[in-house]
Length: 260
Ligand code: NAD
Image (cartoon, rainbow, N blue to C red):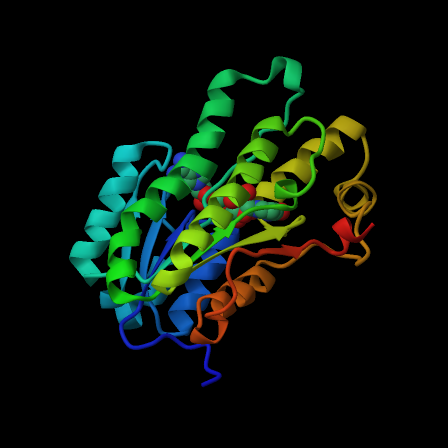
């Protein structure tokens, strides 16, 4: 079968669903027929667009840096949909600051949101995936899971750690029908990147267009930022039956950055 559509009544948990890549993932998975368990600090502005199948969508507001919120999210999702078949660990944020002055509270929050929450959510969904003999986990890493940039020590460390989680879970899940993969994008056109472009334009005294082409795309073989839909398409494939042998992989979508 070559369909990327949901099996009947499959549920996808998507974190960081209110903005950017997470919002595009939610729309893509909704259109493909999945039931959605969405999580974020903020309420997604697009929820009204899902009215035609409102019974298939559950949004849980919470702070994933808190273990209790991670647990409550999975409990509420399981009560509503009985199982969670797919977990996409996507929530994240950036903080740009030199290592010497990098605030320890920000470091801890970055690790909590982008490494500990994916670990806790993986643990929480694992038993029901194991029981079903089927599960898909996709971790949204970053090009900063593979290489570093100055002034991004918290982000780079959390995203490198996420690869370790991905590989270990893939090895343990292999015999259980659970696949675990990471996607490592370079710069995607989302609010997370748009904020950095605006800040750099002020710092460097150049236009936002110049920051985009001369700073952000400096190491890119292709000439434009990545669109969120490029990430969603790959996640949809990794969550399909057709990808049952794809596990423990890091999928770079990086405009050729790491080819040089
Ligand atoms: P975004 O800022 O548009 O969206 C991130 C979402 O995560 C927001 O809705 C935010 O509220 C949510 N979030 C942050 N902290 C949270 C918390 N404690 N609890 C619950 N929700 C929380 O950013 P994006 O670009 O869509 O990023 C999504 C993911 O993709 C992140 O993990 C990011 O690191 C990764 N990524 C982004 C890029 C890029 O260029 N945009 C590149 C590589 C990787």
